[in-house]
Length: 90
Length: 255
Image (cartoon, rainbow over all chains, first blue to last red; front, top):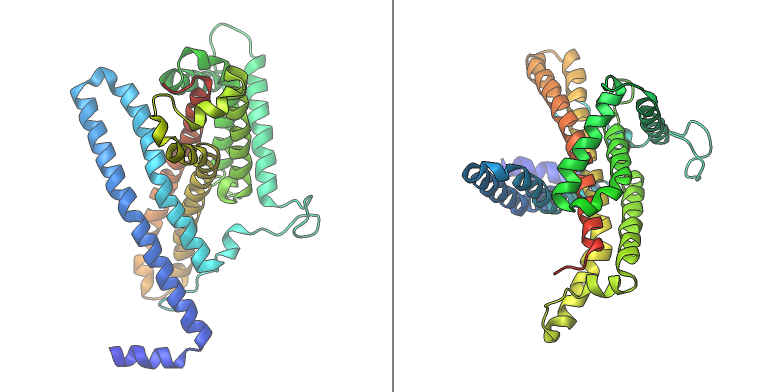
């Protein structure tokens, strides 16, 4: 398998190989950018659901604050997505 | 080329040729501009029609607009700012409806492009919001607003050199930037998802053996369309709620 990959790598031109490496790194960058926000949003929503279950009359307030927190946490993942687009296509 | 299926490059998804005017000029008019104008006209007409209707019981357009206004008043302003924020209701309502209508063009046939998937639209909306919350701060606190927003009261004097740059950056630079990027990236990601599955459906239609995957791809497309309607609403909601929080935070000094 690695021999095949080596042959394919030798067959491509230098610019193509660079483009392939760049898209690989772009994918890696986006993958890394999802980790933190994923954990963060999971923890945040879990805690909010717990709060709503414990005190249903405060559900409206908790929900609004939850969306705020999600918006702030999600921003990092979205910046990662924009960086991915910039690395891959610009 | 993946498995002999051809996918278009990303430029085809978001770049539209001008209807008139040369490329790159300020008066060039393309699909995004058309969507923005249609959304502007739709928002205006919706509110004019709703405002014209008479009678005690709301129905039709007035029903929709009244529930929207009540949602923003009770669900956003009362929860984040409080009673003082009611006077900023008109700005937030128009923001919400405009963003929602530009977003929903993502699933409207023949348009199939969210107006906010290009950076210019969200950037302008974020800039307007930025100017708006600074103006509200200046109106309520005078020139002390800038000092209050960079140095929250209660911070020890020794920590001020550390706190001031952080607060300056987060209040006046990161806020508008993250507002714009959040809306833009969400809509672009949704658009790319929908395009991926539509293109997959079209290419699989003419494929031979791989056509077996077509039903799954189509089911995914239908499901994602529903998901994107939710995202269009949610992003308008989040943009509005963040604008309300920023306006509320500049009305009173933090304590």
